[in-house]
Image (cartoon, rainbow, N blue to C red):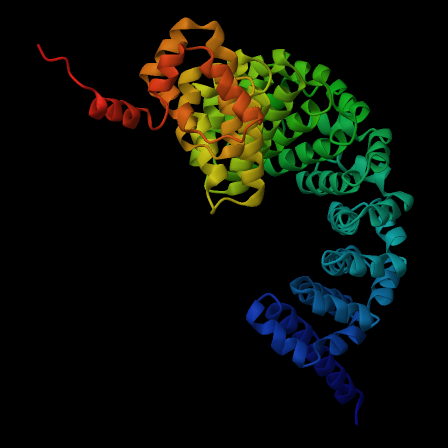
Length: 509
C-alpha cells in the first residue's frame, strides 16, 4: 500500500469520526431520538472520542455527551458510571476554549439533576478546574464554568460550601463586573444559588463585596440580568436582619420600586420578593419600605399582574401589617385591602388565595378600625365560603378560618357580622355572638337594629350548652332587652300565644 493510500485511509477514518460525532450531537437535540441513541450504546462510543487527536472531534463529542446528559438523570448517571467525568476534568485544564466550554456544559448537564450527581462531579475534582476556568480570558469559558458551579451549588448547603471552599465566590463577583451581559447573568445566578442555603453562605457572598455590585445593576435595561440580580439580593436578605440591612445599605431603595412596573413578569415577581424578604424581619425595616413608597408600589404591582407574580407582593403586605397597628394602617391607607380582596375572589390557585386570606387576617387583627376596613370590603363571607368549601385545600381552609377569627375578634361593625349568625358553623358562630355581646350593651341604635333585622330572633334559636362561653354571650345579649321582647322572639313563643288564644274566654256583654 502506497503512502498516498495510507493517508487516504486516515482521512476517511477522520471524516467518519467527524461525521459520527456531528450526527450524534445533532440527533441529541431532539427528544424523540434520545432513547434510541441510549439503546445503541452511544455513550461508550463517544467516550474514546473525548481523547481524539483532532480537537473538533473532542469538542463535538463533549457537546453530544452534554446534550444527552442534559436530557434526563438516567443518561447523566450513565456519564458518571462510564467514567467519563475524570477524562473531562483532565482535558478541561489542558484544551482550548471550545473544548472547555463543551466540557463545562457536560458537567453542568450532569450536575443539575440531583445532589448525588452533583456530588459525583465534586468527587472527581472538577470544582478546582471550573474555578480556574472563571479566570480564563474567554468570556464564554467563564460563563460555562459559572453555570456549572451554580448548578452544583443550588442543590444543598454542603455542595454550596464545596463551591465556596474551592474559591469561586470572589471570582464570580469579578464576573458580574465584566462587560458581557450573558456572563453577568450567569454569575449573578450562581451567587444566588450559593447564598440561598444559609446565613453563613450568604455572608460569604456579602464579604466578597457582591451586594454593592449587584445593587448597581438593578436598573440595567436587560430584563434577564435584572431578574437574576434581584434574586441574588433576595437570597442574601432573607436570612437575617443583619443581612437584610446590608442589602438596604447598598441603596436599593427607591430604585428597586421601578422594577415593580417592569414589563417582564419575572422582574416584577423578583422585585416583590426582595422587598418582602426585607420587610418580614422587623418593624423598622418594614417602616423603611413604607417610607420609600414600597407599599403603594407593591399594591399597584399586584393590581397589574395575575397568578404567582402576585404572590410575593401579597405576602409582603401581610408581613408589614403583622408588625404593628401603624404599619397595618399604612397598608389600609394605600388601599391594600380591596386589592387583597380581589386576589381572594379572583385567583384560581388555592395557595394564592391562602396567602391573601392570611394577609387580610394580619391587617384586620389589630383594632376595631382595622377589622372594619377589612369587613366593609365584603371579605368575610368570601373567607367563610372558602373555609367551608370541600374543594378548598387544607391550607386554604386553615388560613381562612384563622383570618376570620382574627378579624371577628376585633370587628364591631355589626352589619358585616350579622350574616354570620345565619351561615357560620358553631366554631365561628361563637366568635360572632361574642362580638355582639360586646357591642350591644353600649349602643342603643345597634340594639334596635338587631331586633328589626331579625338578629335577636336568630340568637334565640341558637342551641348552646348550658354554662358554655356561647351561652354566656347569649345571656349577655338577652340582658340588653326587656324580658318580654326576648320571650317574644324565642322559639315556640307564638305557639304559647295561640294556646292562650284557644283558652281565652272573651268578655260578653
